[in-house]
Image (cartoon, rainbow, N blue to C red; front, side, top):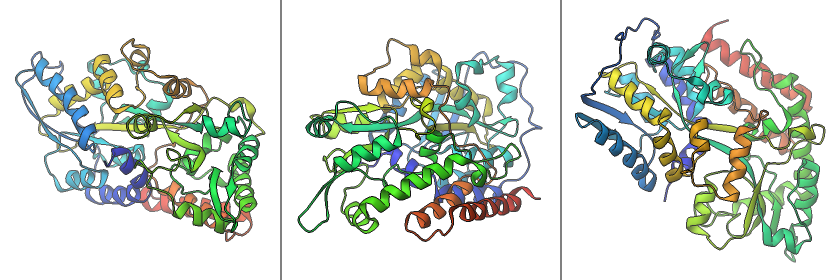
Length: 448
């Protein structure tokens, strides 16, 4: 089954850049001059168009919560368009297609959507209805606005941590997961086995960037590595955290051998299938999101595994317990024909505790409000609890919004791929080049 998380991970890089450009080309102006009623309607009535990216079983979860909304508002019809990825959503908004409420799997579009007005400014609605934004953490709030405009609301979150195969660790004499990157490397090398021809048989940890969830965004918080300066320009070249992460990762790749890692990785199963390398026991330690617990329950229920915060750089052990967080966002389209009804549905999906908990239980994502996190109805296993703890950690970070979408991440990711292959030249010079590429792209979008 194709999961929306497949899209979220695979498209959040390259497609987010392409679609951000589409929005900026097709949407002009801002939503700052919009007018709304002095009071919210006392009775909801009419039809609202809701576009989201979920499919199959997960679309059924979304529909079950929509059914609850319609049951509570019998004069409302929600016209649901499921399976609509970010590119389809952005093209539809640009073309003037009727989209009242749109949901995205990528927080990277927020900068371009807020900046262009593709999503309306929600500030007037929030102020009028006295919506308490304190129910969201500062990190979650940070990726739903750009340049003072909050054009979206958070709909659940993804949090990243370390998965470990308990049987493989115990067999090798390890009693607990690693806490620093040097410990991760030591354990990963000890857990790696080889065939008679020298090729990898089982891998302790796969350090290759681009393997499953291995990305700069997911690793950055483990070293307090910064993406952007306060003025929106690139901070990659001046942030020591990136140097430490990249030097550790490259040395780990070299220790095993790039060719061996690439050959082994090429033979692994698709990430969101039952042949996932962690689920088959081919890889003992893996970086992944909380949603993996649902895949394991469904596809490999007998797997004995644990979860823990991902190891951090040795120079900053106090960061242990933190991680990377992102999530789905939703906003009202600039061309909405029924924005009041769209706002009512958006508010329900993002602030109603019962709705948020039902979504979290069904999709196995981390709730985005404090009340939902504390709800006795939230289904929490020991493995899932780790992600809740990471989400609450003060050092947990996300990627900052930018008018260029995910462009800055793509530029850095392209260079890191070259660097791990030994083609990146001097690291300091290479990162300065990344800074220039990011800043040049920013000027094209925002002007000098």
